[in-house]
Amino acid sequence: MNAEANTTMPTLEVVKDAFASAQDALTSGYRTVSESADDFVHESPWKSIAFAALGGIIIGMLAAR
Image 1 (cartoon, rainbow, N blue to C red):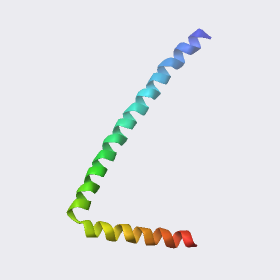
Image 2 (cartoon, helix red, strand yellow):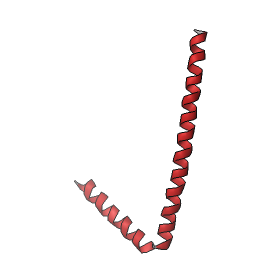
Image 3 (cartoon, helix red, strand yellow):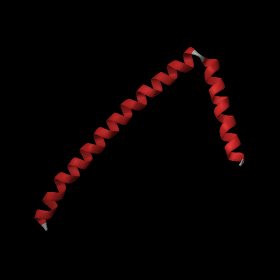
Image 4 (cartoon, rainbow, N blue to C red):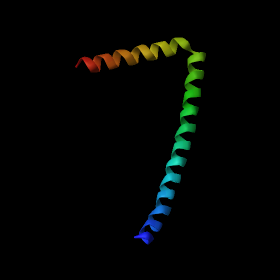
């Protein structure tokens, strides 16, 4: 049973490393998207308001069904 525990431990470490690298990739991607959205809102606030209103109307229409 001890030998079985030793073979599963490296697998657990590999999975932990894979999740950590995936988390790092998602975090950097989120930061990139967040910064570009912030730049867009600052450069053209009226377009942002129009997109938000349009999205709200669409969601409202779908929710009313």
